[in-house]
Length: 378
Image (tube, rainbow, N blue to C red; front, side, top):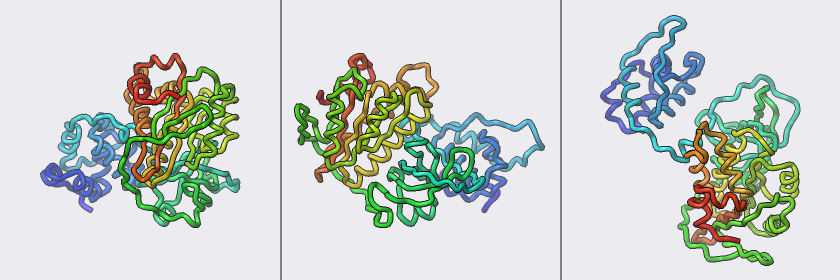
């Protein structure tokens, strides 16, 4: 490792080389750089955590305001730190995209103890450089997965995990004890498949249920002002979904008790939050659905995504972002990402979107522009 940095070499390097240079720095150089970038408590972090925080800043081009500590003894100021901060800070602002919105927590869990109680858990895997975890769909536990297990089975972000886990501390964090299923397949038999780059084609097939005609691989809108558990048409659609040979996924945020109970009785993977849940809960459900469908679609799976009350989903996502503007840029990006998941592919596989919408929400400018005008009315 080196404790000094050749600024000329750094400035002329491409991003991959810059990452390699940062990774080559010693702990004191990293701590000094982290302090100037405003990264909290650099002396308490291990080397890999410092590298992770610095690289996130470097890649985004949006560092925090440079901060100099006024407490404690002065730190050793190392060569070129001011130049490095100036160079990073002068980069153009990164355009907001799904990737910048969907940053995951990558900190290592702290094991305070190993609880005897074992919980049933399931969720969508998120891979980070320092840790891999998923958020349990039922109880919201952060469930960490052994990195050795991830490497052995070649698990990826978006894989749907079902198994058991034990509690490791009082921060609602768990660690996987045993995996039963990965993407619906028995864990012991699960074999990693390379992602397929299959050409997208125009959707042309329909699913026919009674009076309903739903475009397979397309976007389908159903107008309903009734709660799910009361609207017989919606209940019939959900019942018909069970007979389809596809991965069935339900998204519903801020559900009332009756709707939550009704959906729980169906054979469908449920991504939901209860009425007036935290903003983070809804945000995480949407991220997990996007990652899961992207992963399964690239493996040639047939998928049906049912979004209940898309206006309410947009509103719930919006609560995550501190903005005075209704339907913030970040929430619109996530909605567009959800909508774009619908597609038909050349090999016959598809991702079909069914969304319900209230009449009042049909006048929402975002929904009119991004969903209603490009969808089929059921």
